[in-house]
Length: 138
Image 1 (cartoon, one colour):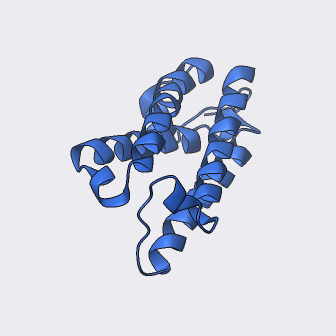
Image 2: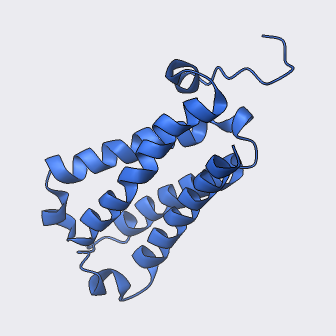
């Protein structure tokens, strides 16, 4: 459990690091990102990523209660990875998106397969947020 707690926390910090790269002037271009013309499309994904990072860090405090959040985040990361490679998003956004997607692969797989093992529950329970807390009445 302790390993997974730290793993989820690190996944949240990973989000924050990507956001720093994304929002620091000049850095996106330096790492090969092609930035959109409208500022809205810069800030919207950054704020969504920030929200996900905050939720991961807060969830890591009590995975038995909040494990569904990092589990769903793992699924979203996996969808992002699939989108990057099947839709060739690196052509649109630049090669750094591939680096982000490759970084998301272990984070996604570890949460999707590690959380059910650590929490001793099924995938369906995490998908539906039906985790039974120790000592609670179901």
